[in-house]
Image 1: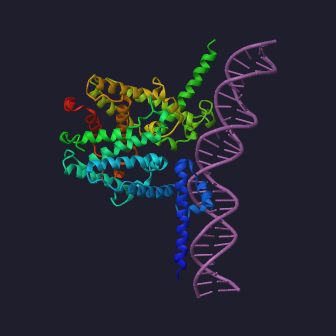
Image 2: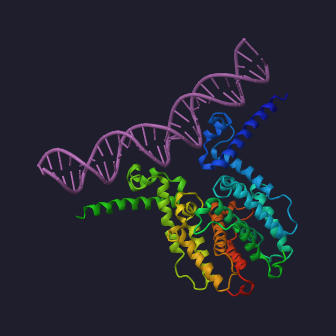
Image 3: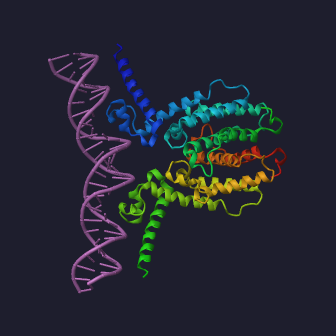
Length: 208
Length: 208
DNA sequence: GGCGATACTTAACGTCGTTAAGTTCAGCAA
DNA sequence: TTGCTGAACTTAACGACGTTAAGTATCGCC
C-alpha cells in the first residue's frame, strides 16, 4: 500500500520546489522584494498552493532560515584546525565568507526579526549550532591558557558580535558608500586579529 | 511683501510636522510597519499631501535618516575626553547608547539599504561626521604611540564594525533569543575593551 | 459507479505606495 | 469688485501585495 507514501513524497516534492525557488529568488532579489506570486510563478503553481505548505510568508522565510543555518553550520565545520586560536581564525573566515556570499540570506538570518528565534535556545537547533562551534573553540582557548579565564559566553558573544559587525557593514553598504574610503580589503582579517589579539594573554601573543 | 515668506514658512511647518510625526511613528513601530496613511493621519492631512513635500516614502526616510545622523553626531560630540583612548571608550559608549535607545532608527540608518548613502563620502555630510570623530581619535591614538602605525581607515573601520556588530545584535535579537544565554551585560564594554586592547601596543596596555 | 477526501485554482478582500483629476481658496490685475 | 491664476489640498482610484473563501477536479476506495 505505497499510495499514501507516494502522495506524501509528492507533497514533499512540492514543498522542496517551493523552498528551492524561494531560496534562489531571495538570494538574487532579497526577501522584501520577492512576492508569494513570484515564488508561485517560478514553480508553476498558483500562489494559493504555497499556503498549503506554509501558513504564511513568514513561515516560509523561517523554514528557509533553518536550512540556511544548516548550511552555515556545515560551512563552519569542515576540516577544523585543532589549535583553538587557529580554529577561531578559520571559523571567522568561514562565517564572513558565508555572509558576504549570501548577503540576502544573511540579512534575514541575522539582521531581521522573526519568530524562528524563539527556538534559538535549543543547542541542537540549527540556529545555535554554529554558535556552539565557536563556543567550544573559546572554551578550549581558555582551558589551554590562550585566553584569560572569563565568562565563556561573554567572550563568545564578543567574537560573534565583532565578526557579525564587519559582515553586516559589508553587505549593507556598497564599497563606495563607506564613509571617506572603501572598506579596507584586510578588514575581515584585521578585525579577527584585533579581537584575538585583544583576548590573548600577553605571553601567548605572537605564538599562534 | 512678506507673503511669499509666510507661505514658505507655512510650507516648512507642514514639512516639519511630517518629519516629526514620522520620527515618532518610526521610533515606536519601525520603518516597515509605518504607512504613509498613518503618518498622514497623525498630522491630520491626507496622504497625498506628504507627496507635496517628499517624492516618495524612501525620500521621507532618507530625510529622517539625515536628521538622525545629526542627532548621532551630536550625541557623540559632547565633552570629549582629550586622551584619544579614553575618548574612544566614550565614543563607543555613546554610539551604543544611541543605537540601543533608538533601535528602529538605527535599523534604517545602518542596517537597511537606501540611496542616501551615495552622499556618505562628503566628510561634511551628516552620515560621515560621526565617522570623522572616530577617525580623529584613531589618528591621535597612533600619533601619540598608543596604537601601532597602520592604515587609519582600516583601524577606524575595525572599531566601527566591532561596535556596530554588538549594537546590531542587541537590537535584532531579544535577550531570550540569543543562543544559549542572554547577552552578557558587559558585552558592549567587553567588546570595546577587547578591540582597544587588541590595538594597543604592548607598552601601553594597562596605562589607559 | 458513486463518494469523500485531497490537491489545486479562481476570484476576491483589505492594505500598501502612489498618482490623476479635481476642488478650494488666497492674492493679484482690471 | 470681479475675475483669474496658481498653489495647497483632497477624493478616488490604480496596480501590487499577503492572504483567504469558495469552488473545481482528480484520485483511491467502497
